Length: 317
Ligand SMILES: NC(=O)c1ccc[n+]([C@@H]2O[C@H](COP(=O)([O-])OP(=O)(O)OC[C@H]3O[C@@H](n4cnc5c(N)ncnc54)[C@H](O)[C@@H]3O)[C@@H](O)[C@H]2O)c1
Image 1 (cartoon, rainbow, N blue to C red):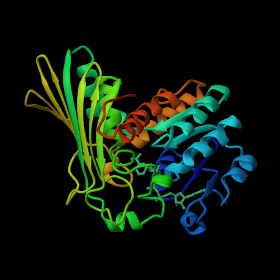
Image 2 (image 1 turned 60 degrees about the vertical axis):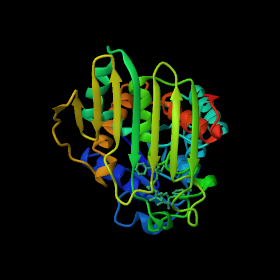
Image 3 (image 1 turned 120 degrees about the vertical axis):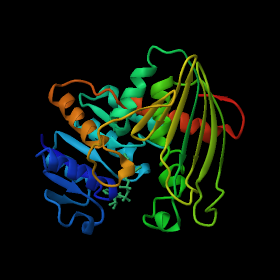
C-alpha cells in the first residue's frame, strides 16, 4: 500500500511506528513544522494538498489537530484517496455534513480511529452484553492534564481548534465504547464546566452528562485529576454487574484476564492502533467498507455536541 501521513506530532508518530511494524512505511509525510519530520522516511511536504496531488497515495492517515480533520478528509475523499482519520471525526455539525456528503460521493473508504474498540477486554464486554437485558450504565474518565499539556500545542484548550475539552478529546473513546456497547441514546442533559484551569483554557475540563434512550447512562469526565486513573465502564443487567477497567473485566466480581498487548506511544492510547490500522488496510485492499466509517465515527461526536448544546436541559440528539 502506498501510504502517507499528515501530522507527525504525538499520534502521527504512533501511526508511523505501526506502519513500520507492518513493513509498510509511508511513501510521503507532511507537517507544517519541518522539524517534526526529522528522522522519518518518506518524501517530505509542508502542504498536504500538494502531497495528495503529487503522490496520490492509496491511503492517507490524518493525524492533525481537530479543526483540520474535516477539510483534509473532504480533500482526500474528493480525489478518491482512502482516509484513516484520528478521532474526533470533526468538531461541528456543518463539518459532519460536509464529510458525510463527500463520503457518499467518493469511491474511497473512510475510517475513523476509535482504536479502543479493538481491545480484547472491550470486545469481550461488548459480546457478553449482546444477549443481556441491560438496565443502566455509567462511565468515568478522570485524567490529569495540566498547564504544561495545554501549552504543548497552540490548538489545545480552544473552542475554535480543539472543538471542546475533556469530552471531545480525552473522554471520546470511553463515550464511544458506552454507545457501542449499550446503544445510541435519543436525548441528553449535560453540564460542562471549566473548573480547574479556567485561567489556561477556554474549553471544559469537567463534564457530567446523562444520556437517555433504551439504556439510561450517566457519564462523568474530568481532566482535573491529580493523576491519571483507569477509565471505568459499568453496566447493570437484570442479572449481572459488569465492570470494565481498561484491560480488565469483572462480572459479578469474577475477574476475566486478557493477555497484555504491546502498544505504541503512551499506554493510555492502548494497544488498539495496530489492530485497527491492519483491519482498515485489509478493507481497502479488498475494496470493502470499513465498519467505523463516517456515520459510525459521527455518533459519538453527535453525543458530545449535544452535551455542549444542552446547558443542563434535556434535548434531542
Ligand atoms: N486515538 C488516540 O488515542 C489519540 C491519542 C492522541 C491524539 N489523538 C488525536 O490525534 C490528533 C493529533 O493529536 P496530537 O496529540 O498528535 O497533536 P500534536 O499537536 O502533537 O500533533 C499535530 C501535528 O499536526 C501538525 N499540523 C498542524 N497543522 C497542520 C497542517 N495544516 N498540515 C500538516 N500538519 C499539520 C502539527 O505541526 C503537529 O506536528 C488529534 O485529533 C488527537 O485528538 C488520538
